[in-house]
Picture (cartoon, rainbow, N blue to C red):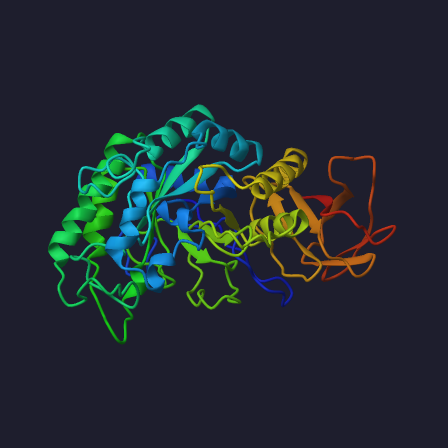
Length: 439
């Protein structure tokens, strides 16, 4: 297996790029299959995906954690009888996401409230049996992804705030359920049967995206989730299906990608990302506004410039961006989210080559970042404070020009420690990209 390592340059910060290996853990207990390695390569090349948080919680307009904040589980579940997303159109979703430049969708098959968005046989608490809608959303979304050349990932929560057999942890202490009365073996069997359905009946699933491990604090309520056997089940059912787990810990054996929540690798502004950066393909998930699920008062969407900068900086750190949208209860993607998708798509059609399949930067800079293809480096100037842009480590530059315009040369001087670009003025572009060609 080819392994990419980069040395620190002239004392500058070393950042991860598209680096991963056949041996994914320190104890070497998990060796990924050739099918997994192929999926890892495809995933790492995609660089951009869309997260979808959608369930009956959208009806309350309070976000996906509404059940955690006081309602009885049995009263909450009654909302399913009124869930009729008449405007849901999987093909329209897929087309809008495809046009944004994203290459995959990660959809919440079952969130912490336990409601299943497919026709599961393991419980009547699902989109077909419990609602008047009677349609299998994941089946329709799977078909739409296939028709629009998008890969499908499925989020699956280890938590269930409505099932009495779930071993309660820190969250979801609804007043009608006894936290001491649980059946782990029965609950585990329920989850494995659901995962078997998802990986058997819905076509190729490129990734199972687990969440909820953190519900049991390692110090206060330690709990053995028995992950190795569950991971083995996923890999047996679909040998090319990647496993990621949003546990905020260092990588566990059997995992194929590493997830960071609300922060890029190596950052921890949100307080979730204390883990080491592994050699696996990396992904950071973040929201367009504030919440993951639909919240009626959360209209503070990040502007297009901010979102494109986040995408570019994430690629510059050798990672994928999984950008979230919370659909409305009627099944539509919010209008502002659609506007952002269109804006990002317009930018990606011009500059996607500098994002897809690239390696990350060899340095860290306040003014921006870089991405790389063999023999080519794309300098993404995002927040310049000067016309002089110093790029450490590059001492064999052959040419520098405005990306896509080879005749628009950019002046530069090469020093012992790197190259300095001399811009004619401080650019105001969302992303002023200079291409360097080098040996």
